[in-house]
Image 1 (tube, helix red, strand yellow):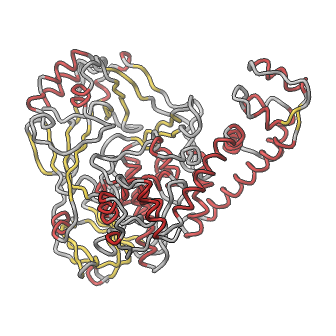
Image 2: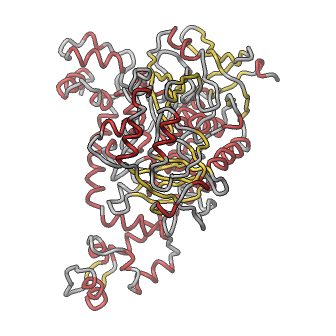
Image 3: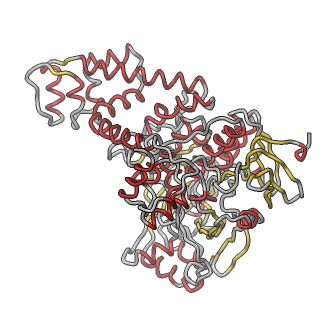
Length: 625
């Protein structure tokens, strides 16, 4: 059958990180899915830096993996370096990050998608949406096709009316060398959606052969690299490529300032908001005028390419200024540019217009995911795509929705923040945004989420078996430590070496292992522990899980208790027909915000800016609580 004669369950518009995860999730749940993208060659393209993960973002990638998404697997298969960040801090802060081979990353994504059942592809631009009153029924393409579907997911990234800026030059585009997307914003605004503009940027790409790495500081990967995916079948890196670090200088800053009058950032041509936590180099110089240098990370783009990404030098300054300034950075004296940095402005839609499933409130069957919701980052986009894909497929199959709470996943925090608070600047995830981050660690995402994904039919039996085995062995190890004692003559040499108080009688391993000075590496020296690990075939992942459980048992119990209190408020549902105008004792601001956001639970209502504890009490009274 032709595309125009087929009724798809789900159409995904856009083939970036959000679109790729959305298409995979919907298809894997059995929905007949069509992925429409302007370029099949650029599926899951790494438009900015060639890396996945980082602070809080690494936790999201692990959660995507635990839920049966593809991002972690693709990252592991194409990684050129792996690092676990924040290892000097507590385990709630540990965050995995990997450099990827940019070309292999996109290739692997396409290969995996092409091997996914129920998924079709079509290369064309979508320039309009088809509605039947307040319901979406299909899309219009540049070639004039009308393609119908029960559900539509828009994952347009930076392409909606995208404008690229380099110095005084401005031209339409969604990414360097690719056209912008027009028509979708206009159709949505015409039926009442609130649109805005945001800005992001990217640094120059340069020829690695023209750099002098001897003047830079080498940044190797971890000595024993881990991986993102929890699957046994995905292997760890055995060799890695180093990144390098260098610095700008006062001379570099002075040269960059000579172009400020020609910068779209400062002459008023760009008026939209850029990412606060990933500013351009000119923004850093302007905001942090007292700093005489800034770090630059020199990141290889792959195993075999000489192309290098200059992380930290994001800019939209004129190309002659970029050229002069970068040549004054140590190691870049003879630099050859592959392409100059640029800024891009694009349309987004306030995410307060969405339900917690990422379906729009105004139009039934229409979902938004990724940068269209005001976020920044591959990981945040992929997480939204996954959840939109799951919920679009479930709704097409007339099944209940799938929503993650704030105490269940960083993905839950991300979506709740967006739909409850909205955003005035590109939203980026941080560990500080999650009030239950001790529970939401990168090491236990599989234990938290794979059972949910397995129940949906998204996680494989292999994943579920692996989780059950990990939980069983962790419980076994914890039980052994709690029940087994060690004599002073065996334990005291280790305690003395680590400046920990000696014991004068036998003591349970659990109590000793909880001491901050004692690591499980120390305990492995004891024959009883090493024998137990060997006999029960306990791997390093289970050892790490057990150590975290023992050392942070008190903190974990406290957070679980707090989370249980939250769950009680999450269970107090607010009917969709609830009329806030009738409640005279609500403050004017609270009433206004509640009508706009339409929270689904009392807990969500309590997180809306402008809704006070007394307003929540009033709502609880009206809910019969």
